[in-house]
Length: 78
Image (cartoon, rainbow, N blue to C red; front, side):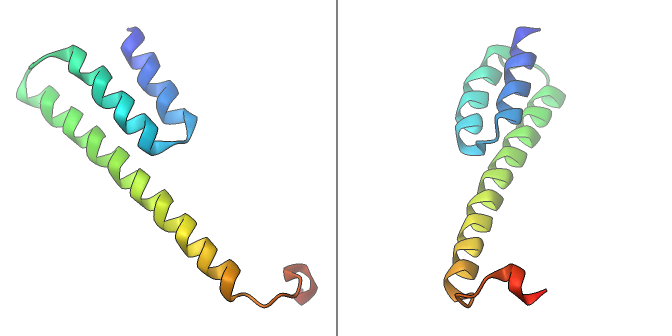
């Protein structure tokens, strides 16, 4: 199905927050469905939300390291 290809492309694109918004729109195409389907969709949404948060936190932590690291070259330490 095209919807699955679209979702996979969004997951591979790398921008989790954008993917989350678009995946939410795409999964609405499935309608109410079964409780098993609803649970699987919820799990996907939670995973995408977690991924988005993890990327944001990683960027902030990297920035902190950049600000705290000495101004010398990292390669010079080895």
